[in-house]
Amino acid sequence: MKTVFLIDDDADDREIFQESLTADHPSVLYEEAENGAAAFEKLKSGSFPKPDLIFLDLNMPVMDGRAFLLQIKADPTFKDIPVIIYSTSSNAADKKFAEENQAAAFLTKQYSISLVRQDIQKAVKNFLEL
Image (cartoon, rainbow, N blue to C red; front, side):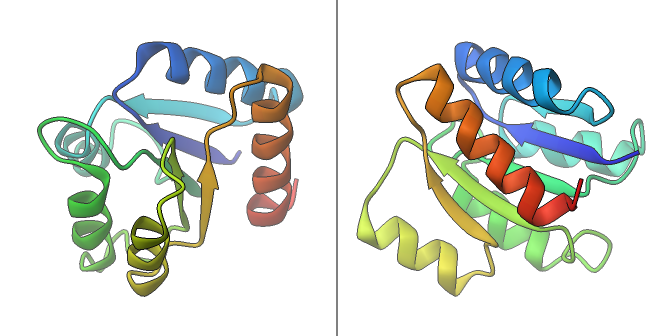
């Protein structure tokens, strides 16, 4: 079983993401956290299988996506997990930061549920080979 972990502070975005993911991939285990610090607590607790793919928002309170990306890529236990930046940002500096810090991809959040679903399907297909 594959596990996808979404780290995003927006409850609506988490709900739309989960519905989109599980509608197309019901066998995928979905986990979520609302910021980078909470995500690390969950990862280190071992309360769910090590994720096969992480979707990471950039702009969050407590620990933002930039700090989380730096920390996860420095951690030998988790550095091999592909991290897709999943943000409302389309800023060139954010894209450059993601690329320079080993993010697997950069997805700008769509404003249509059908486009969100297409983006999630494509990313899951490319990274999880389902």
